[in-house]
Length: 402
Image (cartoon, rainbow, N blue to C red; front, side, top):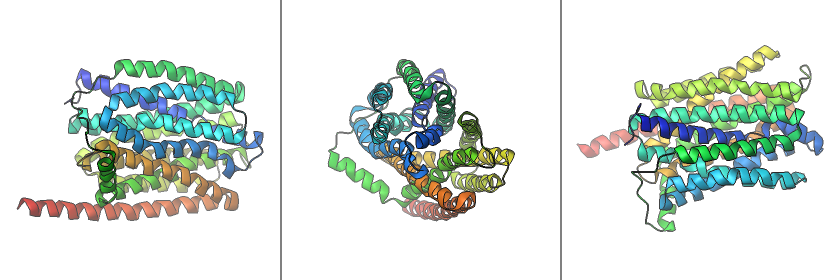
C-alpha cells in the first residue's frame, strides 16, 4: 500500500488532485456566464440554469456506469478515457449556437467528467493506506475547490474580454495538456482486483449500499450540503449585477475566489477526522455554513464576500468528511459506493439551483436566506440520524464479536 509522505504517495496524490482540478475547471466554466447567456438567449434565470444543471446532471447519472466499468477493467483506464473526452467535448461546443444544443453538449461534458470523478477516490481506497487515504481525500477535495475557482474566474473574465467561445477554446487546450500530464504521472494500480461478477450482481451491490443507512444517509447529507453551497454562488452572481451593487460580470465572478476557504478547510478535515470524529466535524461544518448564509444576508459587498468565505469553509469541511466516510464504511464495491455518493451530491447541486434561483426570482435575497437555512436544518437532522445509525452498527458488531 502507498504510505503517507512517501515519493509514490506524493506522485499519485498530486496526479489525482491535478486531474480533479481539470475536471472542476471544465464543470464550472459556464457558471459565472449564466447572466450573459440569459441576456444573449433572452431566457429567465431559472431557465439559463440548465447550462449548469445539465453538466451536473450528466455527471451524476453517468458516474455509476463508469464505476461499474472500473470494477471490471480498472480505475486507470476509466480515468484515461475521461481525460481524452473532456477537451473533445469542449471543442465540439464551439459548433452549436442554439441554447438547447449548448445545454445538450454541457450534459455530454458532465458524462465525460464523470469518468474521472467516479473512480479517483476508489483508486485511492485501493492503493493508499487508511491514514494516507484520509489525508489524500482532503487534498483531492482541495483541488476540487481550486478547479472551481479557476474555472469560474476564467469563465467570468475571458467571456467579457474574448467571448465565451474564446473561454471554451482556452480551457480545452489547457485540459489537453493537463490531461497528458496526469496520464504520465499517475502510477499503475498494484492492488486492484477486477470484479468478475455479472452486471446483475454489481447492481445488487448498489442496492445494498442504498439499503445501508450508515452509507445512504451520508450520501443525502452530501447532496443537501452541495445544494446549498454551489447554488448560493449562482444566485449571488445575479444579486451582484443588480441594485444596489451593479457590478460587471468580470468583477462579480471574483467572488469565486472565496472558494479558497474551502481549499484550506478540506485539508483540515482529514486531521479532524483522525483526532476527533467525522460526525462531529459534519455538525461543525454545517454550523459554519449557516453562519456564512446569515452574514451574507447583510446588504454590503464586504459582508457578501465574508459570508461566502464562511460558507465555503463550512461546506467543503462537511463534504470532505461525508465523502471520506462513505469510502471507508463501504465494505465492498468501493467505486460504486463513492460514485453513488457523488450521484446524490450532484443531483443535489442540480436541483438546488432551481430551488434557490426560484427563491431569488420570487422573494429576493430574503427568500434565498430562508431557503438556505431550511436546507441547513435538514442537514442537521440527517447528521443526527447518521450518528444514531452508526452507534447501532457499532453495538451490533461488538455483540457479534462477543
